[in-house]
Each structure stands twice: as structure tokens, then as C-alpha cells.
Length: 129
Image 1: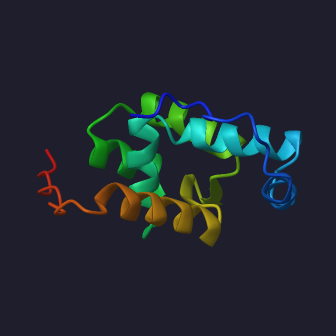
Image 2: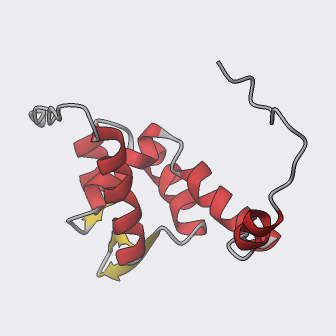
């Protein structure tokens, strides 16, 4: 079993040089880490899942998640700040959607990854009260 260390202290210079061409810069790494950090919260992931195929207002999201509007708004603020969701006003209502196809793709690829190799059992829809 490997202990995570190289058995030899030999550095493969060509491999290292090739890998360095794909190394992200520090500001990009920070922004990407913030994006993944935002998606590390199960409630925010569930909000993203609802917005993946629909534009919804806070009332709709709160009903679907069985949460208070205040709690949903708090999570949406984080997602908005990181440009994962966008909003538009229609009269007195504000509707939310995923910011762009990149966010949708990131979410769907994440779903594929966690389902890979395991049978997928979609959750049963909950009845609204």
C-alpha cells in the first residue's frame, strides 16, 4: 500500500513541465475554490437543482424546499455574489435562474460524477402542503 510519497527522489522534468502548462494562476484558483465552496452546502446544491430547468421566485423555492423565504434568500445571496444565479424583476416578483450554461453544466457533471458506478434512485417528489 502506498504512503503517498515517491519511492525515489527522482523528478520527471518533462512531466512536470507539461503539467505546469495546465496550472491555474492564484486568482483563478481562489475564484474556482469559492465556487466549489458555495456548492459544498447541500441547501445551495438543492437550490441549483431546482433552478437547473426552471426560473423560480423565492416563494416557489421556499415551498419546494420546505424552508422559510428568509433562509432561501440568504442562500441565494451567496449564489448571486458568486454569479452562480441571476435574477430579474417582473412587477413585484423577483425570479431566479442559473447564471449561464456553465453553471448548469457544472451541476450536471457533478451529478454524473456522484452517480457514476452507482444505481441512480431519483428522489420521490414531496407533496406541497
